[in-house]
Image (cartoon, rainbow, N blue to C red; front, top):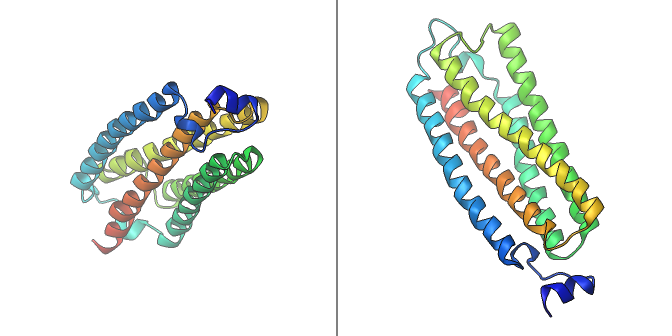
Length: 207
């Protein structure tokens, strides 16, 4: 059964994101995009490692970070990665309503992560007097972690738009690649956060 016949019959291929040449090209192009993003984040990590001890008599990482709060945010983001996996599984089973539900849960978990990160930043600025220009360490910290936070915010907006498109247009070989690459993006920012949690927070507390 061709893709067109399958859609007409109300069914989709098992992997609808790869059912068309356009869909496969989108996935390939997005892998290349993520490669560029990896280089960019790698540069920010290298800058942070070079500057993390330049505190200018301001608070150090060991004095500043509150691991329980960061661990809670990490838990939310990692669970959101799992729910995005469930969303793709629902897509492959041609269950658009379940797909939208899992995407919605992913959005809420992402919002929870973002809320905790904003609260963390506000605590540092208000109570610790740890601002963007306090030291080279603070500048590197806010640049790296804030840049990741901006990616999370973009991902939340992107997935929210896709939920609306799925509600209007349904799950098709056109909308499926969009969902798939958004899940790739979400997994990427989750993996980046694992490195941030390890390099910035854990090493900051023990180093």
